[in-house]
Length: 165
Image (cartoon, rainbow, N blue to C red):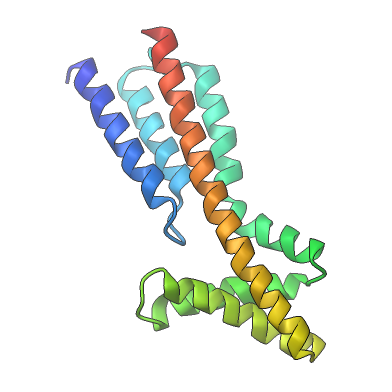
């Protein structure tokens, strides 16, 4: 396979991976990184330097795990609990499978899961509704974060191609 065809295929796959990173439970940063790794292995790390791959790996790890640490951090800042974060994750999983509206089922499940746990924990509807709003805000922030880290990984890849070309 020619190098230009390999580069084109990698860029197209990375572009697709960046855009699917906005879908819940799809690890966009990991997909973009995996395309870069595949390219590097096929090209013997000639065009993707080890330094660039290391930077891509750091962003992949931070971006791919943001679904876990971002809600916990956000709930803690807003006065919620770790249980609320777990309720949000569980609700998102349940919503994905039992609410047959793509993407919205996940978001609705996350909000309802956090709301239910906070209502059981604090017993205050006003507080629970605030946590539901916070859950939705954190979801939007998480999507933006994963999308941005996916873009950064792709940009590091392109920069490495440019510098070694």
